[in-house]
Length: 291
Image (cartoon, rainbow, N blue to C red):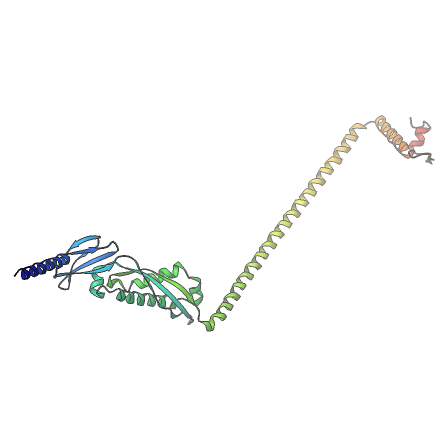
């Protein structure tokens, strides 16, 4: 009897513990907890902590709140000009509406990965097919990422999901035409460089021509000013001489001084013999005939 009573007490304790454990559940910071009753969602817990639910009647499904990453297998895409390329993407996604996520995908992470990867692949294919190969290569970066992400999100909103970013890890060319494309790109860049170089030389020549023209104008103007100043100096010199020797006496005295200076200059350097014309001013001076 005692053993039966003891076993009963133990069973009751275990049952009470099971019931008590079924009354509580824990929500982490990076989770949503979707509480369901008879297959119907009755509430979503989005704050962390210890929560209460009705045991055996209500169940709890956990949904990730943090951003998830998924690597999409590389695949072929075709550009607008019918060139084949290989795109290798990864996506960052998260749940925005836990209720929709559970209702449509039953809270399945693998189901969410399938839906987001398909949406990202279709968006990548559509965006690249609207651009030429050269435009695709020139647009690698934020512009291409934004276009793909925006289009991809148009297909997954009904699942309570959002693609935070679709990033292209690698966008490459097939091996059979990679070399030809690179050679064409190099040739085009060389042509652009040659055009810039020619334009630079033309601009430099234009600047040099304008500079030479300016220098020639400045030199001509300087020579003109010099000629004007020289003429003005000669004029002033003649005016001063005219004023200094404006009488016959002053003129005779000037001629006398100039003749003496000429005679003095001719006698320098040792013994000299001077042969003069009888009508020269020096002879007149020597013979006293000029006064």
